[in-house]
Length: 121
Length: 106
Image: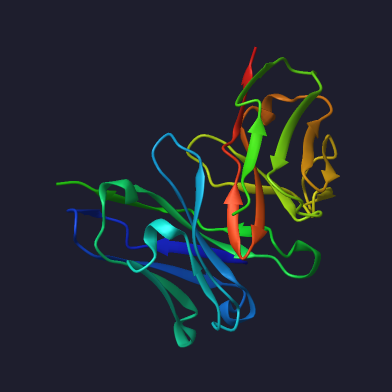
């Protein structure tokens, strides 16, 4: 079964760090581009970060550039989002989502269940 | 950056109604547009990709249209399961979502 499972969400103080994990099953992460998308409480979807299938390209929304970093562990088929210098406005449910192949390129066809990050004093 | 603007923000409708949601891009994006459905507390679900191609398993009452800068998501006959929030999304290295349209019961 094709799945993404996020973990690592927590309540943290402003300025602290957190690392989210996104474990894939049923497919290989090195064959697909993966995105992180977040949703603040009661708000819409906001794209956060992207890593290409071969890992050669990474893109980030301006508000997290220099603070968030994507990495991968191919042996564990797991993606990570390292979040440093967290701010209250980073509070959200974080989803990892797979970009489709072929005609589904530029769309997100598989989503994880999400993990909650709360940044609070 | 390309901005995506959805309208309306909220749509009140009854079961059986035909409803249309519009998504406008600030510049031409060809057909690089997807639509998602999200129910409260649930994960977003891909409905349509490449502007008009229905994702596998999505009911045929959903349809997408448009190209360039104006796109639509139409539900031909609204069903109880369709009351949700709908998002359009574009990708051009940076991914952008519309602000969402909540379809609520009239």
